Amino acid sequence: MMTQTFDQTKAEAFAERMLDILNSGALAVMISIGHRTELFDTMAELPPSTSQQIADAAGLNERYVREWLGAMVTGRLVDYNSIDKTYTLPTEYAAFLTRAAASDNIAPFAQFIPVLASVEDRIIECFYKGGGVPYSEFKRFHAVMAEDSGQTVVSALFDHILPLIPGLTEALQRGIEVLDVGCGSGRALNKLAVAFPNSRFTGYDFSGEAIANANTEAQLRKLNNIQFEVKDAATLDECERYHWIATFDAIHDQARPDIVLQNIYKALRPDGVYLMQDIRATTDVGGNLEHPIAPLLYTISCMHCMTVSLAYGGMGLGAMWGQEKALQMLSEAGFSSVEIKQLAHDFHNYYYIIKKS
Image (cartoon, rainbow, N blue to C red; front, top):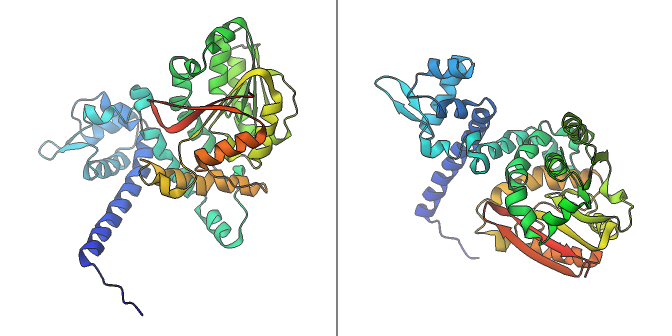
């Protein structure tokens, strides 16, 4: 029997890494709080200030703000002057932590950590018993996803996403039929409906809450060229109706993504285009070792994407289904022309440009 040698240096390095992980996990929760309370936005506009001045400017309780600042200072996100007891958010950090940073703002993504942690007990049950956790158990998930989509999709629609498909902007101006499958709160589709009044837009999503939010926005904008409907994409039964169909990070969440892709194929006109935005990954985990946020994406997958699919008796594909599996399933659905593109602002998604032939 071989005895494994114990590398003390390796062990100590790992212990140090574990402490870094614990600190980073804690900071993710506090960054989420800083984003939701707009503390980062407030501090970005202030000169060096005391905890009371920061709390007053943000309209928050000073004692909680002071403790939050303790985490920010020791986590090296906020500078502290111990002589006059003032705090400063460096402009270099504000560039990645405030709403003014637009698509560069990383703080909203920290919200996934507390949201996912809220279903930890249910997920552990699934480790023992199988099955999944349904949408209804996730508090605030749609609100967080709407922010995510706002940064990766909505803000990039006109300058980056539409130009991926030659002639699409001109076609939208003339007037075409558009479908967004898994439209969520409908931010992207409502924005398109405003910009292209000659086109007609349809959004389907499984979540009644998300569709209610989408309809509310459409009504506020007084749009008459858009409709939203609660629908399981696996029940989509339309034939060659749409010139353009889009899915934004939606296919891997489906209970039956194979059937959904087949239904999209049927609903697309022969000369139409299907744009599938989905997670940039390889199907085999070995190909994702250098992915900058692979641990985060596998965690979101385990605790949301995969489990939600399994909760409805689905395939449990998961967010990290990967390019190889995606191409296989698109081929099996009937698509024969697929081009994969990436955008500079969106390092964690692929954009699949798909045609029937």
